[in-house]
Length: 440
Image 1 (cartoon, helix red, strand yellow):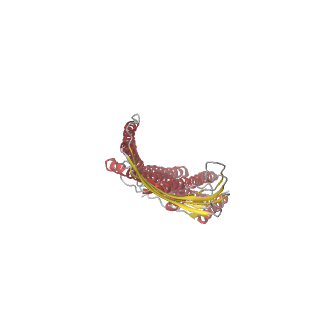
Image 2: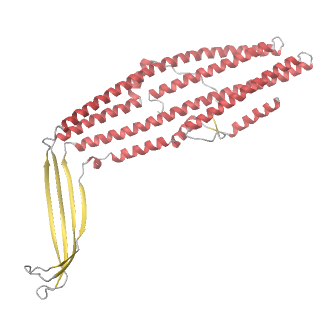
Image 3: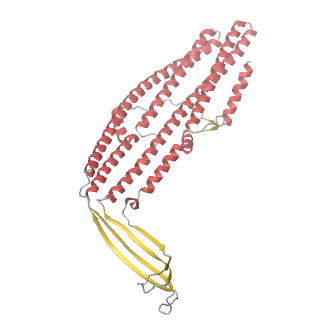
């Protein structure tokens, strides 16, 4: 049976080498490229950018060219008309070029352009929030995969050591220094380590699957792997008083809320613009062509086709002012001011919530960092004990049960340190999201 596990470990190592090692930037790039939410957000940003121009804001005139054909037939039976008894067949048309231009409408052009600027900024902010969320998910999943792979490598090392102990104990038995009972105990340890290794292999595969899902993929588990890097347990120190100003200045959610405040303020100006008069200009030219044939009145009127044109030009100015409409404008201004107050309160409420969340995360992170420091000290002691225990076990001065206990404590200490590191790293990532630093 032991050879089966040896072959399985070697096969897993070969499969890992055949897989493509993916880095965190690559995983993030693939996730962003595959995200439909990012694509939708980019499309919305494109729409906002297209709308953000003075033509949409109403600065420029509108010019309309129209051509209207006119085809007529008349059969006149009117004794009072000098064309009595005539039949008239006519054709032609009118071409009109019309210009309409609002010269003044309560500064609405400036207000509208400002609103389009804010809407574009709002679309960009929404897109950043989506990107930030995806980067957060991928980063958390990637660090978990790194830890699980590191743990798998440690379990493989323990399994190899257990296999070596079987060979060592069998050799001792040949010289009469070990019994069948000793062989059974070592084999039991080897089987338990094999089960733990298999469970850890499953944990690593599940971590890769979660990483794939965060990257927007549903398959490809056999095609990727994360690098087997040695974990760097160094963590940065954070202080709440230093970080709170960064949160207020850089947090994307707060930025988006402040844009909403400006949009609400812009709406007040828009409603106030309705208190001003409106001045518009309308100008244009038209040319009318008539071609007709009169029959039945020869020789007084020739029955040949005859053409004529009529040219018109015009320019007019119109001034309108709303004297009274039941107080609708005043009420709209008041409602817009209330909406701005609501936007300001929403921003303050969000700032309070995020500051509280940051305070909890900083406290949690510092506690986890302390736990990690203690866990690393425990790992150092457990590693020394394991080294000494291995020498004593090989020197036949330490029984297997005591050695197994020391070995188990060593594994537990490493697992505890890795768990503490992963918890602290996850908390740090969540803090970086609040501080707006994750996608910088």
